[in-house]
Image (cartoon, rainbow, N blue to C red; front, side, top):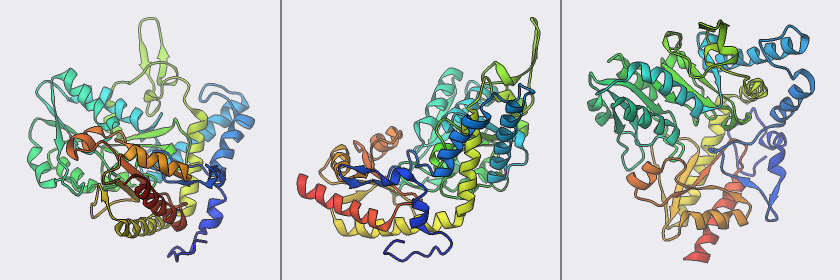
Amino acid sequence: MDAHTSNIESIDITKIREEFPILLRKISGQPIAYFDNAATSQKPLSVINAISEYYETINSNVHRGIHTLSEEATEAYENSREKVRRFINAQSSGEIVFTKGTTDGINLVASSFGTNVVGEGDEVIISEMEHHSNLVPWQNLCESRRAKLKYIPVNDKGELMMDEFRTMINEKTKLISVVYVSNSLGTVNPISEIIEIAHSFNIPVLVDAAQAAPHMKIDVSTLDCDFLAFSGHKMYGPTGIGILYGKEKHLESMPPYQFGGEMIKSVTYDNTVFNVLPYKFEAGTPNIAGAIVLGTAVDFMERLGHENIHNREMELLAHANKLFSEIGDIRIIGTAENKTSLISFIINGIHPYDTGSILDNFGIAVRTGFHCTQPLIEQRFKLPGTVRASFAFYNTFEEIDRLAAGIRKVKSMLL
């Protein structure tokens, strides 16, 4: 257990860390301190082993065969869909579409739903803090439809300016798409309030939950969002898999995004009848192993408990904030009152890339650059990039001590 006191009684961090074999690696002779969890989280043995188990025991295509392997693969695939449905409290498994990840889900909505509802002169609202995956699809849609893309402004603390948001909505607004948790600032946005305001004008809302799913309980029924997307690889699952949740009424009205394979019910030389939900949006052979093992990742998170994960990560964040405040010459970008376990910062007078490179020599993995939010970092905050340290529950207080010591070393070397 950490030398520092933890309020978590129900999980043993030392024991849990043993489930993550990559945490035993050394980089430059030092034990790895992995602080790039916002990019992708590490995987527990239950997830790693489940991938092998699928290929070793039931590898087959789904929904298309009457033989045993196909039936078993199909059952595991659909069981995972049901786990995800419960995980976010959707009303029906038909509202859970397996995708390649958050980016794929947002592109699906923009290409299908967006082209249905957005026309010339209409408006789409996103925010200044969006990941490129929740910016470029809407940019492209608005350009092609001759519509206008509007951005909710961000204040100096990295919070959405909600008063400004309220004034942006008008009869031309056709859709709002906002990130739940900022990947570059850590800000937790007031999504419930945004949805409530939007729905008072009958405007649908898409929620980018890529950074929310690993850290907090998501309930789409309580949120009442119209769409929500997240990725498995940020919540201890495999890469190349994610989900798009959509209200049934919207998914039913949307044309298919891609064609072929399972999304087809019947075909003649003259006509095609598309499949029912959610298969209408799952063209071709899906990432079967990824979808099944996403369910394993859900099991892992639920075994730990959302509250335990959240409390642990807030303890880590508080410890990091305390140490950073004692170092000096550091500017934290993103100081929202409500944020998740992430610190984005710069050392005054030192380029972020130099900081990241030196820290890597100490076995400390951080992210540097724009974090796929170039307009936010470069245009809004006027910076060449930041250093981002993003914490997961399996990180330790001692690792954060090493990060602080590493930053002091960077300063001593370059200032």
